[in-house]
Length: 214
Image (cartoon, rainbow, N blue to C red; front, side, top):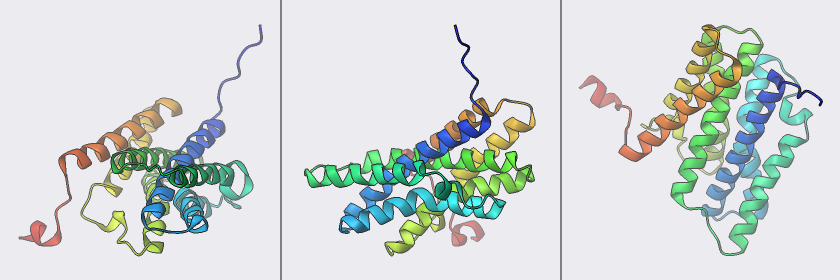
């Protein structure tokens, strides 16, 4: 009986990246539908939301052309997510706000840990790895919000980028103490997702400037 080959770090990273791409594409496309964009606009927003953060990360670490431009699986995954939402909307369906929140939390978590892990594989400083993890997680959503003329979530008094930073930091810390990459990424994604969902459930917000200094 043939032995199963272990999953390599590159394969693991690609799988997590693609999962996050699909989740963010669906979420971004649904936001575009709610903004009453046409089919092309919905697909553009799906692509931007799901691919922009990873492209920014890859350019900054010198992995060029970015993975999402080298591998056709990335744009095809983004297209699949966007097309799914277009078809559902065309049939009169809709993705509820609650589901959108969960999808956004999942995408945020997956991209945060993928960004941090890729930075660690490039032997970048742990602090830089955390920052790149957060950038990967919030980059696409930020550009989406700008295109839709909405204040980006990362700039609002909301536990959003903070959750991404936590997830990336958990990956970095776990890797530093010798934890294998898969469990480290799982722990980071869980921490990010749980914090984000808890913040939504109990309306946790970071303090505004006047509250912090008052």
